[in-house]
Image (cartoon, rainbow, N blue to C red; front, top):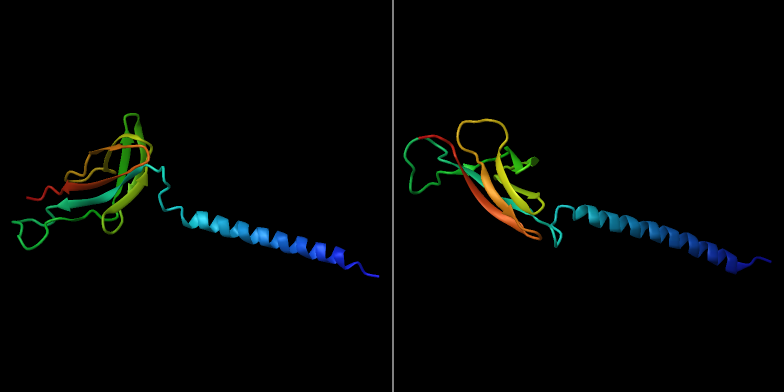
Length: 139
């Protein structure tokens, strides 16, 4: 005679383990996919960096004289030295997490023009929004 209750317990145990594994994978994928979104207590800076004038000669009233500083590396320093670096996107935008404190941001390496240093204070639990304008040196 076959005891069906033992078979049911084994089947339920296997199903529960599979369900647990699937739920674990779903939870991990949710956390991984939300890695780019800020957590409630996150602090840092985000913004856009532009440069002007973008062309030599007089500025036109019907056209912008600034363009995004795209795909450019910047370095972030605190009073002790370099903390991190970041690269702007094609629209000159960036977002980086930082601990609360006072920072200076400038272009990585030497170039012609003025690309910082820009100063920013980061407050706990807040993303500080900035709009920095670089001077191309074109006159």
